[in-house]
Image (cartoon, rainbow, N blue to C red):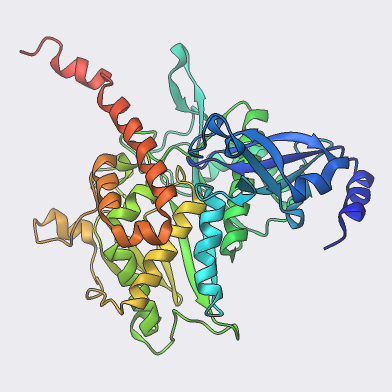
Length: 443
């Protein structure tokens, strides 16, 4: 890494005058401010200052030394933003009172990763973003951005790709300029839904990259007069969006920790234990990985207009089985619970803590599932245990999972649960159109 003075020179040569100091609030939303490039050393050493209580989830007071939130620039993250001329993006860590902030989700993930660093292990994460392109229709109601996108089974629809090629090409050029190694773009299983895949990375870098992906996707979508939506289930009768994590560990010599070509499902003993940890803590993990009221509309064994749903409802694992919560594939674990409304730092940290707990306690995974769980469900047979059916139950599960709360961080979990309880209460008091249509003149 160049010295800070040299970095200033290099960025100025690229036309940069300002830095976007970006951090992530507890809801997983990017926040920040523009600051002068010339003061880069200050932003690295001390951080850009923010009023702490103005940020969701800091838990900081309204006065005193710890009322200020400082976002410290990570200089290795600096890169020019193609959609903001003259601006370089910087990932920031949260500090208060000169100490790492325990409610900062990036700091939470860093702490979790320290546990495996002590063993010489590295966590690699491949993230699969699924999203919708929406727009406001007549009367302000949200609808699919492409009104011609209305096939009953729209997966891989090339006509829609053709109609929306300008947006996809703009995404391709923007992400490529930001250093993403793209792997594929496709139309997913719901109208208006897409998936863009890019190369996996070390866990912290993968989380940073997903936040940058969202920043770029919002900017490009606005340019094309549509909204980039991470809402898990915007269409009631269509599949929702997931944010699947492909998880693998390597040791200090770069050798796989979770996989074994000769093992059951291609996993090592540690691999099965890691999967067992995910399943054991799955109820509590639901709160962090599926953190909205709407998330549980996705996590439901409901019919889909396309005739297919990939919702991981039951706590199970199996070889290349997309009806399971954990899918084993090519010697890695695909964790299918997260959705794109999650705080990606917290979701990765919580998943890692759960998996490590499975290894530490040598948990026994259930027998691998070798059937379509939805077909089994339709026959009325006994099923594996289900995930929580709503956000309130998931939050209760998190509160009651003392070991996961301790591993993830008490301060972070307390603040997270407090805010999410308020969200649930607000939802519970809302009267929907469905209720009015069903009950207004019924009794």
